[in-house]
Amino acid sequence: MKKNFMAAVLFAALALSGFNAGAEELALPKPDTSSALMKIIDARQSGRAYSDQKISEQELSNILWAAFGANSHGKRTIPTGRNQQDLKVFVIYDNAVWLYDGKNNLLNKYSETDLMPYLDSQDFVKPAPVHLIYAGGKKYAEAHSGSAYENVYLYAAENGLSTVIRGLIDRDGLHKALNLNEDEVVTYHQPIGYPAQ
Ligand SMILES: Cc1cc2nc3c(=O)[nH]c(=O)nc-3n(C[C@H](O)[C@H](O)[C@H](O)COP(=O)(O)O)c2cc1C
Image 1 (cartoon, rainbow, N blue to C red):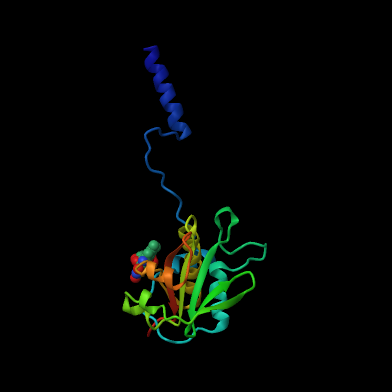
Image 2 (spheres, rainbow, N blue to C red):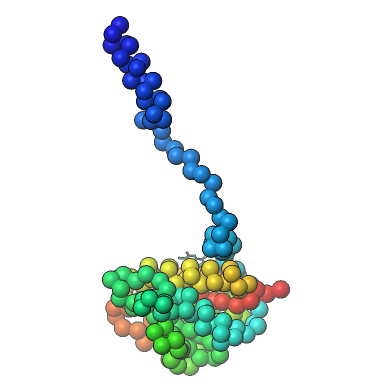
């Protein structure tokens, strides 16, 4: 009898404290998506129809800064493993391939090779006026690319541009065409443009 009483007291105490040992779900409060950042995250989406309308140098600069630019506190707009900052962002723009130098905010002409045959497994990519190709050291290239392409997606969502990240590319062909070394890998391709009407 005494035992039953103690058990009942314990149960009541636990119930009053809100403790529920068997709970396997935690219902969360509704996300507060009212801020500008949360609205852009909500708007982000992949787009697969581009017009050939040119992207201005100012916009290209903004896109690349979002991807892998130098921030105002001495690092990059994305986190990098061991702060190695070894992501390479190649840019096809104006009929040439450029390598982005985020520290100096410029593009270095890299080659005039037509890389489209390595990228156009899906026809919709062809009209896009800007193509980013991500590459870098094997260890962190995937992670760094993911951070960079998400920033570009968010920039696109905020600025009426359309983009998609693509893995359906000829990575070996690009590796050779871009003259990368054995420790480097090509990860993804990201076409960007205004949406086709
Ligand atoms: C690693 C990765 C590779 C992808 N590769 C391709 C691709 O080659 N072609 C493509 O059209 N979409 C590709 N996507 C885009 C996904 O299909 C897209 O993100 C998914 O359908 C969800 O749609 P959302 O981005 O609009 O939310 C890829 C996405 C990721 C994360």
